[in-house]
Length: 288
Image (cartoon, rainbow, N blue to C red; front, side, top):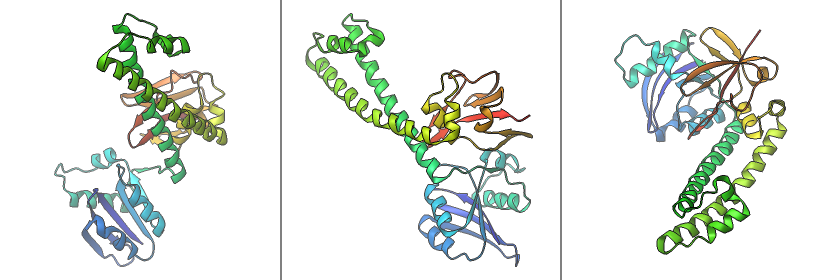
């Protein structure tokens, strides 16, 4: 078997490789254009270890097509295992290789291609909803400047008519018209995405069980399903979403730390962090 520690960069890779049968060691810098040819030339069992990062989907697909095994590691824990503070691409690749050989590699769960695609559905919808919110805030601001305070009623038929009849002139009137057009366009794009999310949540058993809890809809349930797996938080073994349905104690980890909640799940307790590269929902339940 060939074991490869790969320090991945968008334009190149620094690798440290060892053949466990012959003991031969290799260090090499591979350009982006040379990666496909290099990995296709490797015969036998190949295991590649790298830190989890963004913009790696093309590389993961390449390794999957070639039948090579990929390990993704927790970047923070990998760095913590290096004693020396001097950091170079070569040292990073050697560290990854050493951790894999010593069986200390902090391996992470890798989602399937189907799960990645569903994550893109949620991310795309999240971005469009954010754009719609910005447009609505602009229209609310225009109405308030004219002494009209309708709050959420501004988005009813009567509120829309009132907004269209405001006595605006010049560029302010044009801003209102184009904002309304953008709002209608965004609404038309978000509705089919909502339907797609609902259909995807209905097909999954775990997402269906999560929706039995008050306040948990298809979007939250599907995000929970996409984040489910078995993780380890320190030395404590924690199960993923399936345990959330039956356990009374669970832990949700957000971008600012972790907090423990007791009792049934509610919408307010579910904390979902959306990032540009996908969805990260850290939901865990303590095993008995």
